[in-house]
Each structure stands twice: as structure tokens, then as C-alpha cells.
Image (cartoon, rainbow, N blue to C red; front, top):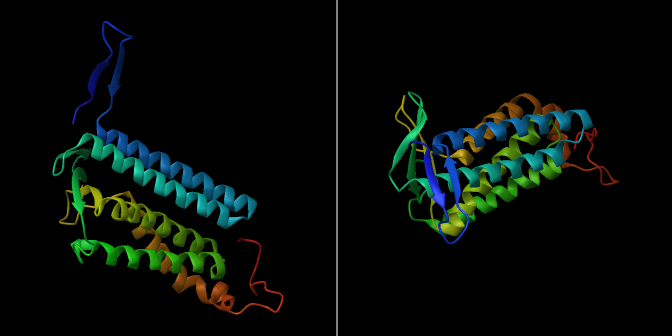
Length: 219
């Protein structure tokens, strides 16, 4: 997909010339901007010792970037069309997935919506009431951000828009939301096995004053 040049207007009105970059470059720019914003938010959270507000904002940024990349692809590519992203590693390919991972539960739209909504609600409860360690908080909110991105697709379209295909391995096509769900889940596993028992296991029981027993000001 090459850059395109277009002209808006004519003899009866002002004329504007616009130049667009290839959609693959736009998608990469969106990913780069999102990673930069997340890094700044994590730094701000560390400096202020206020993890949750910045983690929630990070999740919202994930949702926004996911929506933007999907909009770029759906506006520029036909279903099944491919384009350049990172040659030799990844390519763009517009795919509609009406199931879950690996197209499981294909066609079960409302079941998937309910399962996803319940799962996101459970993760939000853990993030707001139980988890205090920064790694756990960020992991949960990134998973929530990615889950919300795909839930919006499923509720509004009946399918999820995927667009990133690996060229070096046989793997299902995925999207930005999937990346953060996967990375967040891996981080959550590390948190659980390394930090949960020490920092947050006791948070299921509140003190009589309603505070969490391990509240250390990082929330």
C-alpha cells in the first residue's frame, strides 16, 4: 500500500491537496505513540505513588489506540486485503473474527459478550479492591483495556476486526487489543507467582476501619 495523493474541491470552491502515508506506517505510529504514552504514565505513577489513576488512564489509551488502528485498517483496506507492516515479521491483513481466540465459539456473539463482560468486571474488582502491587495493577488494567477494545467491536459489529499477521510463524491474525491482553496476562502471571502472596494475599480481609491491611499508598 503506497502513499496516496488526493484533491478536495474544485472550481466552485477552495481546493485542498492532501497526502496520506501508507496505512502500515500509520498503524506503527499509533503503536509507537501508545507505548510512549504508557511509559510516561508509568513514570508519573511511580513518581506520585498513585498507581491506579495512571493505570486506568493507560487502559483508556489502549482502548483509544485499538479503536484508531481498527479505524485506519477498515477505512483503507477491504476484507481479506493485505499490506506492508514490518517486512519479514508482520504484515497487515484485514480479517473479521466472530469467535474468540483461534476462532473458538465462532458465531456465539452474545455468549462471548457476556463472558467477556463478566471477566472484565472480575478483573476490575481485583484491580480496585485487592491488588496493590504496581505490576499487578498495570497488568490487570492493560488486560481490561484490551478486553474493552474487543468488546466494543463484538457488541457494535458482531465480530472483532483483526489486522496483524505474523510472517515468520503460522499464527492467527490479531489486533492491538490482543497484544495488550496477552502482555498483561503474562505480566499478571509473573505478579501472581512472585508478588501476590507477599503483598496482596491478605487484602481479601479488611481491617475493622475498612482499610486494606497492606495499604501502602501505592493505590
